[in-house]
Image (cartoon, rainbow, N blue to C red; front, side, top):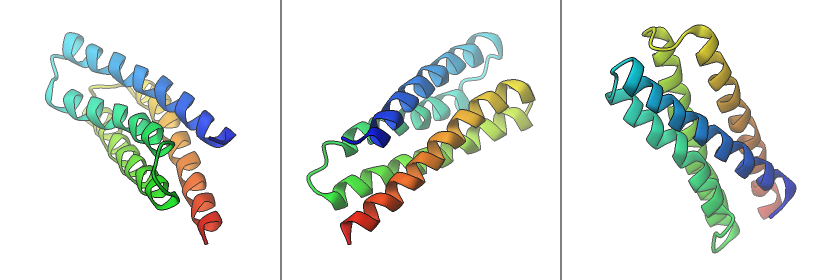
Length: 120
């Protein structure tokens, strides 16, 4: 496991914890359950797939798991934008989470590109 994957795991765990807290807030304070279930699934799946990628059977398996994680990141980004647009989150609350989500997305893209380059 290289340094970039360590950073990804740490950031994705921290982000997943924030998403779980967001779900609690949405259910308790906003009485919203549908979107909160979706975002907790996608937001926690990011790190689970990153962690699983590090135990892949091959470089192709590693890349595939990171791609799944990237898709989950894109879905989480969508739900965050929807929560802000529907005023279930303030711009400030949404931007903080979105910033973390987009940072993970950038590192994932970089990791995928590096892994593909090293695989050829």
